[in-house]
Length: 98
Image (cartoon, rainbow, N blue to C red; front, side):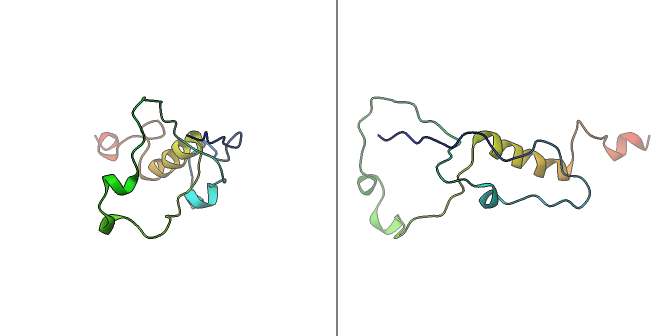
């Protein structure tokens, strides 16, 4: 099994979005060769995909996926979630109205 060596560092900022700042898409943050996962060696022999999944359920081509570091991925979704509400950055409206 080939080891995927990712490019060092990340491009995501950890600061929350304020006002009308836009968040780049995961594809805009993507860097070729970067990975956000590591699979353990299990000792289980590899099985070809066509033996596990019926042919009618297999895709004919490749699927474009963003290649992000774990830090970039977590920071991206953290900033998106801050757009909705951040416990660390504000209070619930009903609590402030009491």
